[in-house]
Length: 300
Image 1 (spheres, one colour):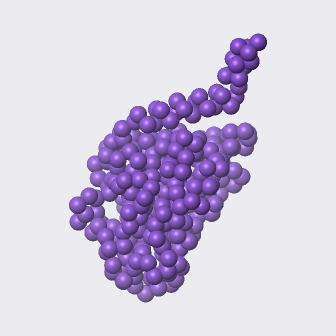
Image 2 (tube, helix red, strand yellow):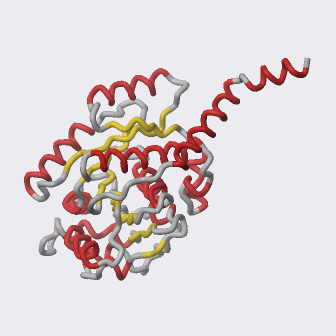
Image 3 (tube, helix red, strand yellow):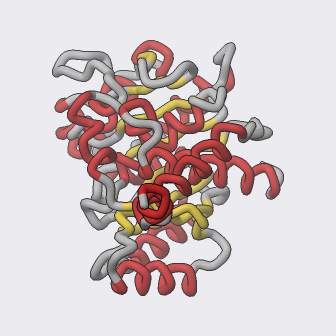
């Protein structure tokens, strides 16, 4: 009797899910990720708020760094949430991206090392950045301040980053324009909920304008589906819709709705270190591996 019950337990949906997650974790742990030929600079952008931009930026960064790559996160959002998640000091008065943009301070001077993974660094954002949009208006080369600072850092650093992730505010102001001008790739997180594609076409138009006016090398290279709830038909429908519209650039990896992913920042951690066995952490590790391997396949 006990033997039958035991077999029934092993075949429950929960047990199958645990077994599948363990296998996925083992697979991703075994992966060795290629170094890119040159620094890949991603702007994480979506003008729609609450889609997981900051969560995606910090967790992809931590995932890649956990695989031995050098990763820099630039927090360009005045809220400083990326700095918080990476356990980076960003109280008012801390040297930050504000000083880089407006006071000609170098990135090397404001860089901080994150405790989240070896090789992971961050340029923090402080509340001072809230006024930067207005202050930049009268500054020479206002759209390319970040680009110039980042190029200088990459070209002079003893250990230039393999990846740079720029976390943008959810608006198209001068901060976001600076991010687009500095990057060579755009990653758009799209949540699997109502109105998911709302604003994406406008964002693509903005990318096209930036390409024409400021940065010919900018490309929309990656779309990541976030907040996926496998229990709903809506989420699957949105995922299918996004894949139909952007088949070549939508990652196979999908980020599920996850309590652990939501909890991690309150402990000044990414989910990669907060609970690396959780489905959210595994999914971000898979997404990071896919980004690295797709880049290598495309000669990046």
